[in-house]
Amino acid sequence: MCGIVGIVSNSPVNQSLYDALQVLQHRGQDAAGIMTSDNGVLHLRKEKGLARDVFDNEHMISLKGNMGIGHVRYPTAGLFSSAEAQPFYVNSPYGICLAHNGNLINAEEIKEELFRQDQRHINTNSDSEILLNVFAHELMKNSTSLQINHEDIFKAIEGVHRRCRGGYAVIAMIPGYGVIAFRDPNGIRPIIFGIQKSDLRNKYMVASESVAFDALGFDKVRDITPGEAVVFTESGELNYQQCAKNVKKSPCLFEFVYFARPDSVIDEIFVHKARLRMGKKLAKKIQRTLMKSENIDVVIPIPDTSRTSAMSLAENLGIRYTEGFIKNRYIGRTFIMPGQQTRKKSVRQKLNPIDIEFKGKNVLLVDDSIVRGTTSKQIVEMARLAGAKKVFFASAAPAVRFPNVYGIDMPAASELIAYGRTDEEVGELIGADSLVYQDLEDLINAVQKKGKNYVDGFDASVFNGEYVTGDVTTEYLHALEAKRNNGALLDEGSDHNKVVGLHNKN
Image (tube, rainbow, N blue to C red; front, side, top):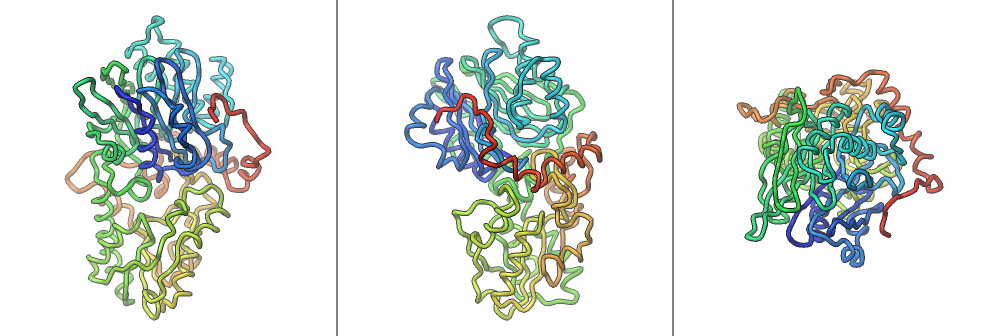
């Protein structure tokens, strides 16, 4: 899961790109990068770390130009080298820069094709570099002249959709021409474009979430539809075209549960309202189950993403809601941290309980989801040490029992606490007196408000094992787990295992 942004303007875009990455920082905290185009000359700064740490004044001054793209990285494969930070660049044809959110499930197959058929070299383990080279090859194959046009681009993206399978939202830039954005045929990963009207020339922006437009004063136009490509030229022209067949809008359900900011609107669905409805649905289940035999004194959210659901839940149960944990704002989101040991260590640094809210009480802790269970177990322990009489745990999402292959770091089923276990067994493992999961049907109904058909369905594969691309095999999942489990990643992320980082301005 990553954050991507692109801007075509009539004035320098360096500060705007940086501000957008700050707003999208929740989508990835391991690396950041910006590439700009100034009269056909490219400028790049990318490195591991948060956006605020990657870019200093000198870097910002050097990022010249009225057009550019940016990226914040969340490594779905775990630990990584700085060479895998984005944007990526390839010089032929025309020079293409690319930032990508998602994962390709046929990356290895395409990598072999690129070498044997297209005679292109891939230097990293990133499937974003693979996607860039597929786009570059298709553009070279379909270009009709030295002067590029949007028809050539649309034909190239048709080729990308034919060859690439998985979830991907992409922003590319061609120096001297413009910015291109496109989305996978299933619409798994979000991407939206907006406009800022100007007397001189309209400014265009494309980003992962609508909050980026709010922060920069752009008006949201619409979500890019599945399989669609949109071209924003330096001269201010806007062109778009459907470039795939058999499309369907099936956004990732986990976007609404956890990843997206609550003030975002994705595929015409307000994330905040969706989470309120999650809390209401979960409250009804708790009334049917837990409250038949137990008394709950207080509802406490696990900050931050569960707050909205927890407030709604408490209101519908008629039980007092309070903040019981103080969050250290300088510790990142533990779920998207690479490596189990890092996540485990960070939980205690991140949260500290307010003892008086726990002492002698039956406490209902509410979280957005339970993935590996590391955070949940330690939080339950904190609640007991703070004096809680009983600790109940509620998840606004169903049990996560299956790997994610479309851009979320859940590739190894064995690392998921609910894999092969009942709800009761998971509750025992995290140390809760009782555990209540949201039902999948209720979650879907909460996100897709009844009577509002903005989407065709959802990718709920982490909950039900049904992959919307329809081509994820058991063999593929086993191979992915062997490659990307925490143990396999230890050597890969070692400092001595360096990959050449091309085109990086230090």
